[in-house]
Amino acid sequence: MGIIKRQGIKNTISTYVGILLGFINLIIIQPYFLSPEEIGLTRLLFSVSFLISLFLPLGVTNLTVKYFPLFRNENNGHNGFLGFILLFPIAGFLIVSVLLILFKEFIISQYIQQS
Image (cartoon, rainbow, N blue to C red; front, side):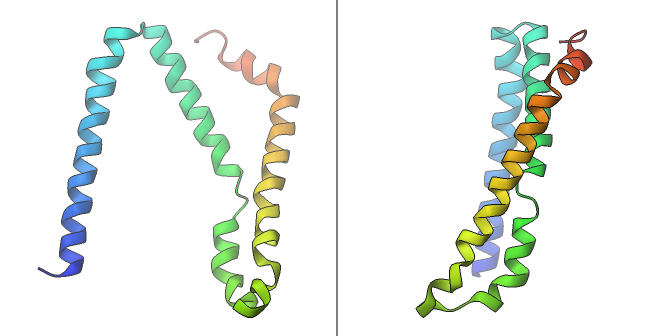
């Protein structure tokens, strides 16, 4: 069996195991331990945190793929590319944090009735 087939089978098995664990967690375990309000709140918090996490990196992966070959130099420590790339997620974190602090009351007021 080739390497690609073996990796494909392993990835398929791990994906189905993850789906099975998610099903057991969401359908069987959570309703037993949590009330419907708590389940709704946890799903809301997960959704909001997922949306926020999309804005934090500020496209660092695309920048890395495009510009790293220009900075590549093992003898010179890649010309400080790592430090340069780390500035973007830090800037994204600061921007999103400030926006969340400024709009905290508005965000809470949007979800207070159904939480």
